[in-house]
Amino acid sequence: MRKRILCIDDNQDILDCFDFILTDEGYTVQTALSPEFIYTLISDFKPDLILLDLTGYKLV
Image (cartoon, rainbow, N blue to C red):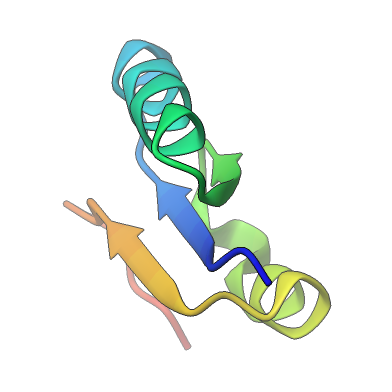
């Protein structure tokens, strides 16, 4: 089974790079521009790894 990686960043270009590189390496990748629904994303996608760039966000 392919490992799943969830990438969250506010820069679409960075997310596109992560998606391209990690998918090419055999991972299943889910990206998001905002951590607003991070708990739902984690629950639905069930990632093995989460890459976050959360400058200025407060998760409650």
